[in-house]
Image 1: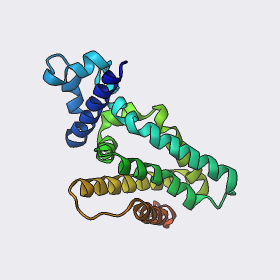
Image 2: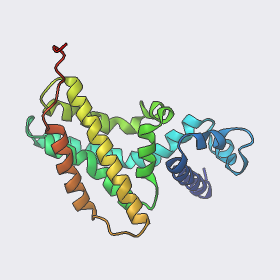
Image 3: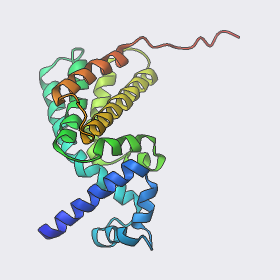
Image 4: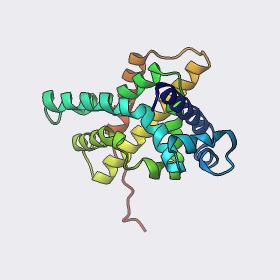
Length: 211
């Protein structure tokens, strides 16, 4: 594809990022269906032949870079930090690359990610994408550092993901609105500490023995 074509494709992906962040996956239906108006070239010229292809393209547009940086951080932790002492570093490695990429781009990506967490169609599309490799590895390693039954550990990691993605999305909103917001290092440190508290809080198991 020509340089001009590359720029046009990126512009369309970033427009879809904002639309999805605002309206969810239903916007993808109009962007790739017949009669989609101005959005129709997205499907015709750039091979986003269905909603799944468009959602995947938006996700991977920025997540490839997040994945590369997170993978490098995790590799260093596995090489240099003994098992049992990795939790804080792993949590930071999960969060920092997303904060940095959101900081470096003037987009809607964190808000897009919030939508994907509550959009059943998007979650299905994203489940097996290669750009999630480092996140899946982080989940495995964090779970190995925690105590308790596996279901409880995975529940806490899911709570952590909801917390840091939602917080970064709010930070992204404030920056767009020119409100005062944390610097990237401060945000990363604060989110790391908060997520550690979530992960290590006592697990409350209901007493099923009572009538």
